[in-house]
Image 1 (cartoon, helix red, strand yellow):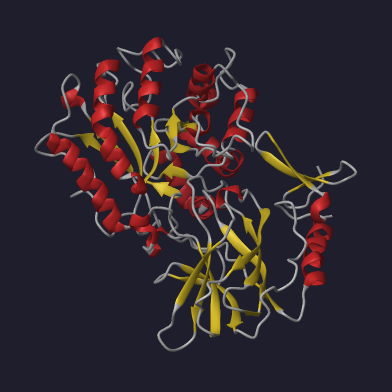
Image 2 (cartoon, helix red, strand yellow; image 1 turned 90 degrees about the vertical axis):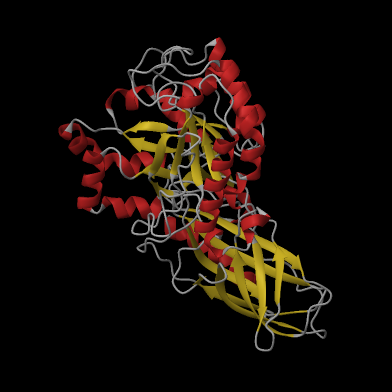
Length: 512
């Protein structure tokens, strides 16, 4: 049935092909490990900051950081243990800005966390009043550097900011005490409004909201507190429901909590680290579970240095590279159909089918553009925005599409233009830096100098060309299927194509 579904989807494209269009088929590349922003393996940069040494990034990494593993974001953990009951000095706040500038210079982003303690014997974290004050001080600095912050982990509470071993906030089973509720409120009041905040346990979110229903497709990416509140797992693959990560209803490992996370993580990021550091037998037993667990719970980032019993097995078995290829998003171009002529000020048809073969969606907002680059001369470049939202390109092999008529500028020069797909960062500060653009997983499409992906097609711009290129090919409902009659259905983090007769197929075509 898989071949039937894919064939019918392709048939729709071919049937609409006219003499005024060109079709291109692309070759996927799912063996090469390469850099892409906001996904992949991480390393932690942590330590206690002081007036004389406020940095966690500067002097700690350089242009060779993470190069061998194609890393694009460290976990940066600032320990404010020297300032539990006093204002953060200007030197520390300025040091944070310098660190973020260093990330920008290196083409990196970070997973960001703050804490007050780093030893289980020291549970003396700051009071809610001081957490509030520190967040108020940090607010303008977080806003000014949101471009290089992938996600914030809630932090502040407990040892390592992991919301346990705490004097002021109770232990890890007390998910939302009065003081914890205050800190959650302070976080959302002071963090950038377009950034997610990840908490250590799913139950923190459900208890805080008083609602155990996962996000729906309509709620996802809405910008509400509910839509920005996620979970990180720093006990990946461990026993006892990943050491309480999936605990619920007095169970160490509750299937309902796992279903909740599977659905939630289509709309909020998930990541963390494994912590099996003293049991080689457990590491041997669990390390091969990583692909299925990361796929089901849509992991976009994972620590690469802790804990080593599991990491060593990933590396020696070759699994590390597999995880590095599929963690986060990974987009394959499948085929495209484009107008081969268009008029200045007129419309051009752009139809692209692609698959996200990665474990996770893209989470932070990002625009998509078709770029027209003229051959010869001074090489004018025309950039036209698309209406597509890459965050909605579902993972684990699902088909998605761009199927649009774009309007070209009236003052466009005549001539032949080559077409590219450009997925830059949304922040103007780094939008033109190709290190922050998304590279598609296809052979011979990526240009590291520009950050463009070559669509392999040309369009001739001529004032004699028709202003209207005709109808677009009939669309598909987000994934491969039999035209508009099929529906996309999402349940417990899995997505299906539902046919008019009620039959369901997975995103890759298997009957369910």
